[in-house]
Amino acid sequence: MASIKFKLRTSIKLGKQASLYIQLIHQRRVKTITLPYKLYSHEWEPLNEEIILQNDNMRFNYLKEVQQEILKSKQLLHSIIYQLEQRHSFTTNDILSHYNNRQSGNFFPFMQKQIKELLQRGKNHTARNYQTTLRTFQSFCERSEIYFKDINSNMIKKFENYLKQKNIQPNTISFYMRTLRAVYNKALVEDHLLKDENPFRFVYTGIPKTNKRAVNASVIQQLIDLHLSSNKSLSFARDLFLFSFYTRGMAFIDMAFLLKSSIRDNYLVYTRHKTRQTLTIKLVPEILDIIKKYSAITDKHYLLPIITKTHIPIHRQYESAQRLYNKRLKILSDILQISPALTSYVARHSWATIAHHKGIPLSVISQGMGHTSTHTTNIYLASLDHSVIDKANEEIIAL
Image 1 (spheres, rainbow, N blue to C red):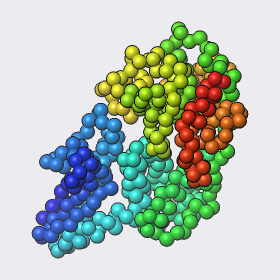
Image 2 (image 1 turned 135 degrees about the vertical axis):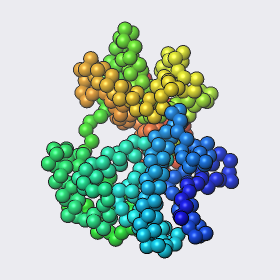
Image 3 (image 1 turned 180 degrees about the vertical axis):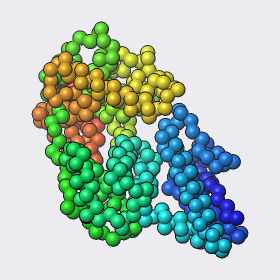
């Protein structure tokens, strides 16, 4: 009888994540399958071979997904072993070969693997985009398995037509196509699972021109002057928007996870969630006023009262808070009768636009916002002193 065990390959470094793997034993022969999941020792129960799920763990979603994948792998291996047992004679190599063949050529598990890796790296937003694309593509395929060899230009064109028949907007269709193409190219370039057939050559994968997202300085001033003392929820949304603007367009996710320990002397030091770049911002009076205003109701760890509940998973609080934040910004936009409507992105775009209108050099704006997308810009900005950016920020806030 073949034995299947899930184990954690513990690291020699204390506190470091370890790899999850499968141990196959049959006829005293042992084979291992390393899985694409990293766990801490406190997240794994070796006796029952299962994930330890705790709501207060920031990796709750990721761990839940890993547990589901463990169950799927168990089911797959038991199915393979059952089929091989009908032959009466088989080896651990046979089990391994069947498992790899079922996993590697199947597009759906491969894309799920990419999603897990994104979650592990904290790229939750991108992971959700991948998951949405995967569900849509699975609905189109109407099959539990689809192999890379089946993905050709004809299938992708049919998928595009399928989306058009459902009245999906062209921008969304392009988004689905770009996501699928990214996964396809990952298999092509890094995992060598297929030959390049360029199945996306006959569908639109362009990036549409972004709609105007910035507001001018007069709108920022209107927002500052708005009397909201009788409506605490709208006042909080306004203050978060201004906080983002004052901090050079800080993203909502970065505001949500700012820690009190992020304040160092007279500076706010944080790492951008998107790029992992560390930014340093001088604590001007406008920023300090907002921090002090909410200091009495914040969590003992967080700087702003966005993550406030200990009994609700952190990721759920963040997602719920962002949805509520954008709804309240829409109400504020209606009150001020402005267009485009305020969103969590508008503060960032507005800071850059107002800075540009004030003649602040592009190099200062780029570093101030933590841009890393242009290689030339990164080289150009490498030695720029923080005081230059701080001076620019104070000038912008002065409106």
